[in-house]
Image 1: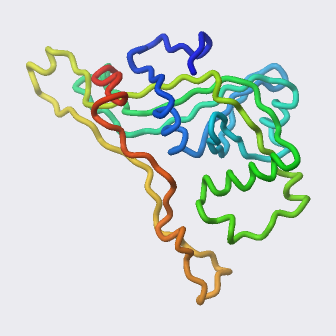
Image 2 (image 1 turned 135 degrees about the horizontal axis):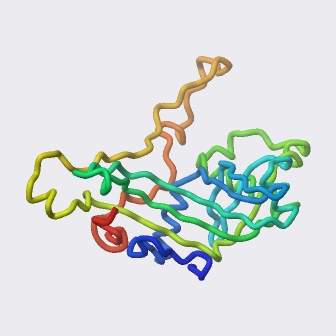
Length: 231
């Protein structure tokens, strides 16, 4: 996937080229930050996305800056980051974070007609599996007001950091301060009904508990070991 534009130069030992690992990061996330050019200046906007094979689909308004930028031909830079922990080192210099990140470069294509309708259903199911069977059909106005933007996974780079701090040997030989990792993860709580849900309507099975097709937590060997003990 990587090309010269997406080659990792700093801490290149953390680079990940394995497509399955890259896809697992994209599948676990659902919020990305999209960079584009608007009136000669850079802009960055968070938005929902879903991976569909070798592309991602951005979801938003037809009047959003991202949609206008795609129509104008602006290139896009898209970043997805999952934070797995805070690395508490024995020095400020080696303090860091354990993370998995993917950056995508390319141009978007606004989906129309049946492609757009399929993408809308796909995005909803990717975010809330099972939900599409319960919601009412979108009206023509709602469809027109919503944009689905396809971005190919052609120019992609990924970086992963795992493991404990990469402390200097001198700090380890004279231990005076605690060091380690504070694990972090995003977890869904119990579904909370709004005030318009009748008492006799229970939470749907697919929301109790809510869960997506998440991949396993980062391994301590294999591809996830790349970059271990380097801040």
